[in-house]
Length: 330
Image (tube, rainbow, N blue to C red; front, side, top):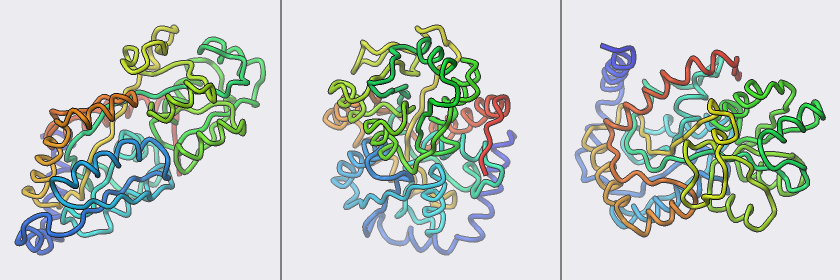
């Protein structure tokens, strides 16, 4: 039995003992019988909204009303904790990602939750890439020029992310290490929305952001300049944007994801119901087009088991990278 399997088995046993009554009580009534809450663990206006709100609107046709709540801070940890503080009855869902379920807990010196033991994966909604976006006044148009500029102006260039321990932050640290620019300054925000606003206003020179429709529109309008994306191939929605791999940085490949999570002790039948309805929603061409227009790739073939394995694999893959670059957060 693997480490993750042992941890899951233990968590399920503990969860059954602690929450058995609540879970049984929840399953006694048809699910759902009241409003569902989707927690987006970032400030409003960021990529979490671009992903979670279209799902919530569509799933409302299948499961009933879903209220979306943005609870940002601590790289997503506060929103994660908010879900865990509720009963594991399927009425409080988390829109988690690589940052909240892998990178944050691995890099934290005092993690407030265990992403494997405390959460259960339900369904991956989308996969996505990150973008290196700069203010138009910055005289760079590719990663090589960015590295040269940072070295010529040590300590003056900063980059914004939605928080310490996010995938955005990890990619920033990887870029610093691979580019040999240790004094590139990281500025953590409570979400990507505030960081992007400061980029537009010139308060920071660069952001490392999840590709979104809003980000692409800002680039088309000339308010920001995207100089690289971290996907393996160019985006179908914006094929003129070069990848980091094309620019001579093959180790800067990073593809993230967003998906649904519930507390580990949530009953199997409830998890299956959410996953089934989500699979039906994700098969809708209109919802798929909403995501693809933002540079996101919808997943119409996910499941709790597939998503669970993906999280475990990413946990194992990224752990040595995080250790090698010394990424730590309190």
